[in-house]
Image 1 (cartoon, rainbow, N blue to C red):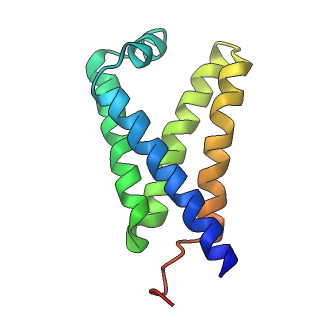
Image 2 (spheres, one colour):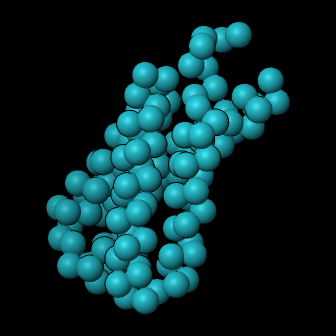
Length: 118
C-alpha cells in the first residue's frame, strides 16, 4: 500500500514535469528555444520534441501505455543529456539525470493501478 502511494506520487511528479516542460517547448518559451538553439534545433524542432514530451506524459497515466510513455520520456531526457555531454556541460547533465532516474524508478515500481484499484 505504501509502495503504491510512493509510486503514485513519483508518477504524478513525472507527469507534471512532462506537461510543464512539454508545454514550454511547444509554446516556444525563450529559455527552451535558447537551450535547444545552441544545438541547432529550429523552433519547429523544439515544438515537435515538446509534443513528444506531452504525449509521453499522457501515456504514463494509463496502465496499458505506461511503459511506452516512460520510454519516450526517458529517451527525450537521454537525448538532452547527450547534448549536454557533447558541450561538456556537467551541470546540465546533473540537472537532467534525476528526471531520467525518476522514469527508470517508476518503470521498476510499475504502474500503481495495473491490477485495478485494489
